[in-house]
Image 1 (cartoon, rainbow, N blue to C red):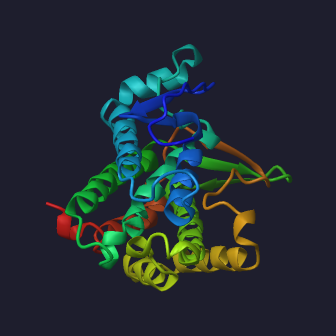
Image 2: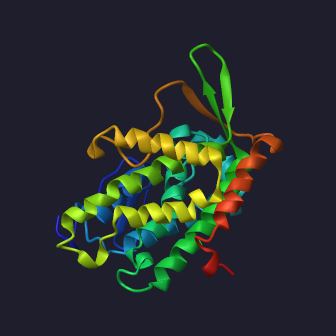
Image 3: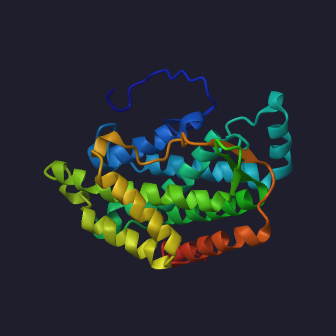
Length: 284
């Protein structure tokens, strides 16, 4: 469909419209994969269309405001099926919690998707500030999630494992980071069309090393290594740069926090990541 073409969108899920951009909240992972394909393959729309970046960052900020600032009202609605929160995921459902974490990770990895970061078009402070704002929203939302819910995984044997939201988020982030590096060479295929915006694999790898591996968290390094191996052994188009809901085990979300001692290590990692330099120069 050509740009700026009037059209009607039908969806069975709650949705948000930001400017002229329609985002299905119920399928936020579709919006995330859309932005990745837009960045690397130009399949969906103009790669330089920064409004798409703003839309997803603003949706994350909206979720942060709805869940964190209006916490009591949100949690009351979640408990009552007849008053499901409008335009906001239900974090007590694992698939929807997964969507929230996927969007948080997209914003955290967002600075790696801005060609200006690599000197291709000169500095663009607005986009950098945009992702700095998004990272602060992500931090607040992650901190709140760690105090509000945890994930329960029931194996076939009947045994249950409790996983902190932040640890699961770390696994997702490693998968999405590996996907970015793996997909980066695709831009070389269309370099003659967008020479000023091509970001090569080496640049992405350096960005990942500087922004994430520099935190020196061994668990995350191992997760990234496993994700990278999985991508290397598969064709690039057979996998998606998000994690679908795992098929093994029964995943459920428990609306109560992890014991403080169990969640502390992950929050310390998040704090290190936040202050590792990705947004520090734009932070107050």
